[in-house]
Image 1 (cartoon, one colour):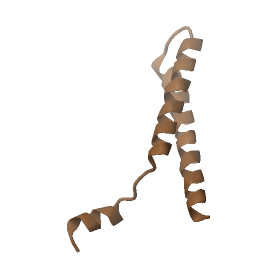
Image 2: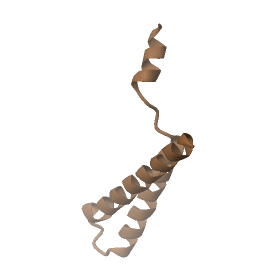
Image 3: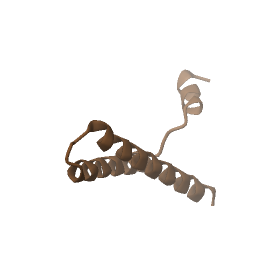
Image 4: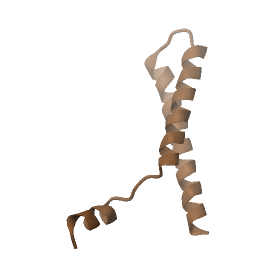
Length: 70
């Protein structure tokens, strides 16, 4: 067994669709919150974006794994 076979089994790959969807949700949410709040506080802008981005990422990963099992 060579080292490339060991690397493939040791580290599961994340679906590209989940990464792109989570990043897009993060950027859109951060942009909307930044536009809607007058002070432009970085914490106020990034925390909701991070929460929504991670939630979308988790949902897409869950749906892709569920579809893979069927």
